[in-house]
Structure formats: structure tokens, C-alpha cells
Length: 145
Image (cartoon, rainbow, N blue to C red; front, side):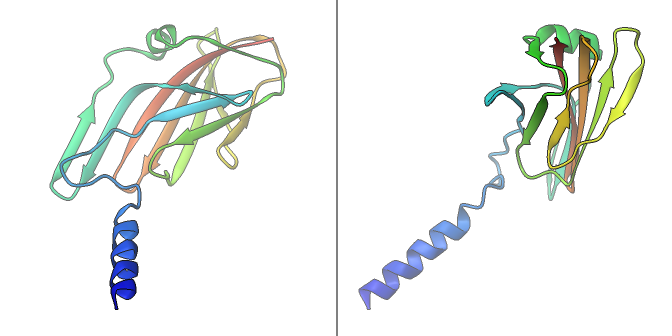
């Protein structure tokens, strides 16, 4: 009987550890970009979250270039893969690649991964992430060799 009670208690505890925020202890989702098996935390631009009776937001106070300047510029090779790892399992990830001439291109994100451009240069990426409870914009920059 004690074994059954112990097993039931373990199952209940493990069921409660599902990775979602516990009421009153919300932690803003972190966004990482992975290059050569190294993780880098992206800067956050905007953030909105609403869940039950909880609401949080961060309004962008800097433009993409200023946020990119605060990020330690990555160095990557042409055609190399970048992987995104975002907390709380987002429903969509969209990436915009900003060029030095202030034009942007939408970049296909497939399986949380993008391919760096085939041309050398400096690029700023804006990663727009959505969840049922909200959205966030993350920024990072990279020098492609």
C-alpha cells in the first residue's frame, strides 16, 4: 500500500513540473541563438504576455540597431545554420534580416533554424516569436565571412 501511495505522489509531483510559469512566479521567455553549438542570449525588443489575471509588457525603447549594438556580434560563415531556442514552445517564429542599407528580407525559419546568407557582410536579425499568451521580438547581429 505504501508503494502505491509513494508512486501516486511521485506522479502528481512530476505532473506539476511541466515547465509553464507558476502563478505569481512568471519569468519572461528567454530567446537563444545557437551557432557552432554555442548559445547566445538574444536582446529583447518588445514583449507582451497575458495569461488569466496576469499581464506584462515591455515597450521598445531602442531601435534594432541600438539593440544590436548591445549584443556581442556573432561571426559566422556563409551558408551556415543558426538555431533558435525559445522558452515556452512558441507557436510561430518569423525572422527578418536587416541589411546595412536598411532594407530587410523575410527569412524562412524551418524547424527553428535559418541559413546565413551566401554573401559576406554585417546583418541584424529581428526574430518575432508568438505564443497563445503573447509575443516577443528578439534582436541579434552577425558578421558573415
